[in-house]
Image 1: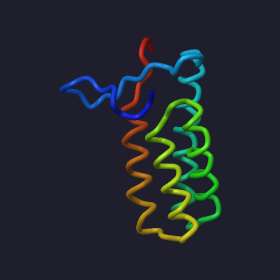
Image 2 (image 1 turned 30 degrees about the horizontal axis):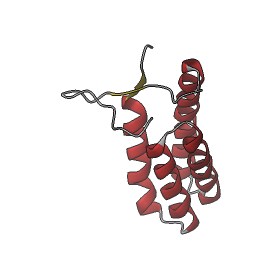
Image 3 (image 1 turned 180 degrees about the horizontal axis):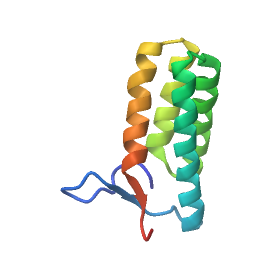
Image 4 (image 1 turned 180 degrees about the vertical axis):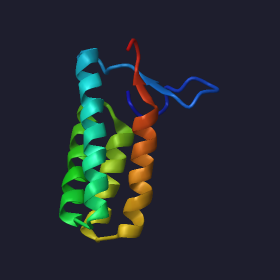
Length: 110
């Protein structure tokens, strides 16, 4: 599960294993897509394109549950909601949280 609970004590790295039935490479590819979504999200926030930030948030929310990525699902939902309200002051910290998580997560065996 990708929810941040599988951390090794004393490190900032979140090591995750693929959920049952999900090949490891599929999870690696998914996390790479999430990192590309992050870059897209940053651009949308910078240009105050709330429609696009909402789309990216919705994508993260929907795809996260398929991979057991509870933290990504949660962040995606919060991003989607903040976008609907055009709450730029909320989007900044959410994007930072997403960036932090994606910067620390690694798939076991990679």
